Length: 423
Image (tube, rainbow, N blue to C red; front, side, top):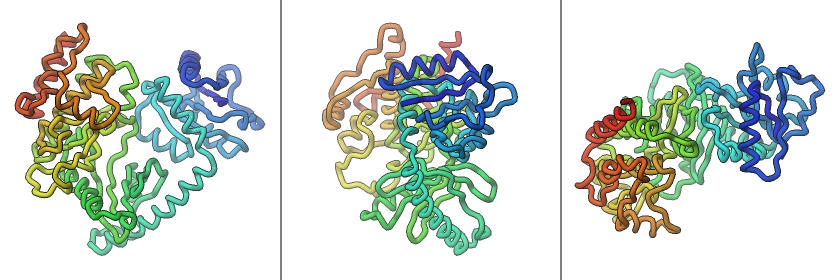
């Protein structure tokens, strides 16, 4: 794989070279020295490279976006990953709108993540673009249906208003996730779409609708914002806020210090406090569902299997297990009834992982992993951070009655630990 990196920082270019040499066996890296070479000439041979790493701010009066607009139509121009030292939704969205394959903040760069992004970008071929265009055709049909739905309900929206679909960013067997723009105010957001015609089980539709209904009324900076949701004849849709800085799972690849770990978990606890106070249990709390905004604030997301504590129906059969085994409480793993203390157990798993870079329990099968959550002793922290063992013990207690009982109680404990770092 031939990589071209255009960045005005010699040190960062060297860091990229070091990272990629560790992760990729067959990689050739060309560093483009802006100070020496200036802007590439019109006959620059872009086709030599499989991927371009392009800095957003090239120093002086040079703008990476201007270069991307100017050169992207050139024959053989490679898939481009925009680099930036600024965490801003505007930059992320503009990069994608200009045709970049991806975007990353430099503080989030790690060897594995960078290598994975390059491999993925190298597959950003014409065929993939054609596939995305086919999905956008379906999306335009959804826009029409949303217009009709809103008109029928007299929501006072002009039929020309709706959503502009920018890019398909994820998909499953029955659903698609798009980066989109609300045309009425150019707000960048994520549009989650469920194709009802492909759903064989009505429970999936009900769960999709409930995800939006559960959190649409919550106003907390630590919970994802829902802007709109509903059903058309063929689709269900949820319009939610866009997170440009990725998720906690990606950040776990970095060397997170204990003070940052406690800061993250304190904010997660504030999010849990907000949902628990209205009777919602998340039930799938894990690093991939902790999202970061451009200003580096975090929020809980993905409430697909959440439930209200006072709901009679759980949309499951007795004993059915939903969730992610690595972060699942013992009672949830056994298919028992859960409450807010199950979410606090998941916080304990994430805190342990942030502090040690290892999960508290691991096994080859989900069943074996659940068995460990239920029966294995609580793991011990390394000696240098053993002062936090009591917090881990309470969070990972096998019996819910032995854990912290509420998120607000946990917040006090975590904030007290945070203050200790500042003394």
